[in-house]
Image 1 (tube, rainbow, N blue to C red):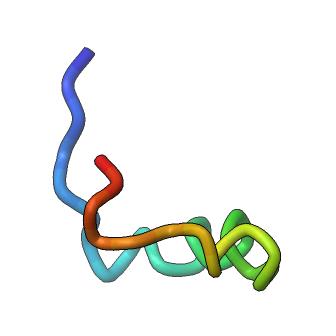
Image 2 (image 1 turned 90 degrees about the vertical axis):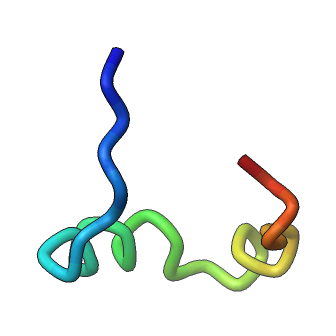
Length: 32
């Protein structure tokens, strides 16, 4: 599997996945 860095074009898809504070608040810069 090849994981590419996020691009600006990926923002809408990521926002739809992470638009819930209940999920986002547990994400930190330490998570992979």
